[in-house]
Image 1: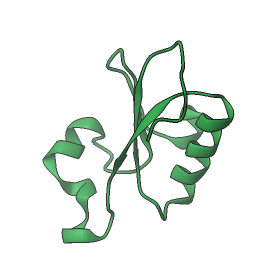
Image 2: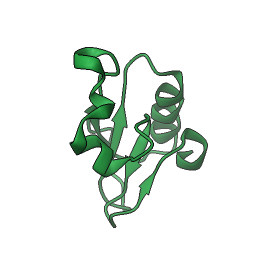
Image 3: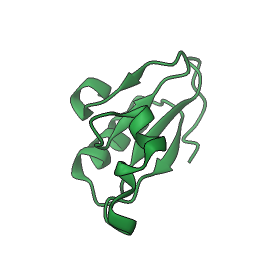
Length: 82
């Protein structure tokens, strides 16, 4: 999902549509006008996609939301992202 242009570069938000923490993170990013791509992490499908090795490489805590910045840094908590 591209939510507009931002001078700070592209970021990727790992999110789940039923997560209230991820929801408030999406609201904050939109209010700040920060462009982001959404990567959906389904928390119940196939035992939970958060347990997949690909997502564990992004967030060892296996939780959403996680925000991957273009400089390689990953923010792991909704309050830290906001």
